[in-house]
Length: 326
Image 1 (cartoon, rainbow, N blue to C red):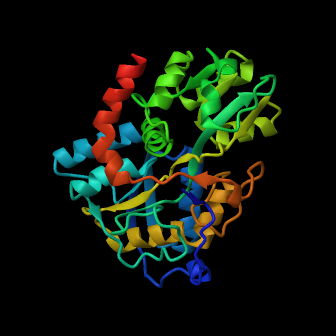
Image 2: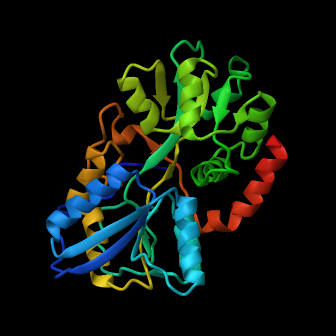
């Protein structure tokens, strides 16, 4: 495990505030899983810096974005220049297939190892962690993942299924790779009556209404809802959390690679990372503050995660989870 705050001395952090002098112009097409509002804000901020670039976007969930892209690749006519999607495992698959363009000059000096591809084919833009949400009427106030296996939580835990969610699969692989109990943790959850179904929004609804008292969920949802008065609390467990990083990458078939590199540089800059904060997310850059309602970065432990290994292990993890819960 390492803390979100980098322990290295960051000598080049300020340099990220300055964008490279690329005379970017022409058209760009972005395929993204960002919410529409976030995608438009991102594009507007980029265009303010690069007014000669005409950028359009296609927005959908990561599985549908990838289905569209793969169909275009199959037809020999990929339309996207850039991808900004949910997870690094999907990016690793594209990298393995030779579909991505490395951005060798991208400045990642301030970023902790593990938040970008070492060969610079993809780069994290945010850190969306998964922890524990609980209803404030719950008698057990969890601080550890193992608390969800206690008798007080019997039949009261809900979580997204990794069979239906890429982020949930990353969470499952991260926990089983880092918790001393490994897959025994999920076996204990199943024996304790945990329900593995539904998306994050459904998990939040179940816990907020008291239908369930505990859930595994992405951080920003319960933190935002608590601020609106919902009877929920969010916990970053003591052992650490998993994270998806909403990585950005350039397609090897991009018709405008220089403008695409400028877009990546903008997202990695302090200005681009400040936009992630404004949108209510944890920026990947360790010098950017966290949104309201979050603890300090040094209070959040990020479990180690190897996207390439996760890609290789995904089929086995899917089979193992199915054997436990179905």
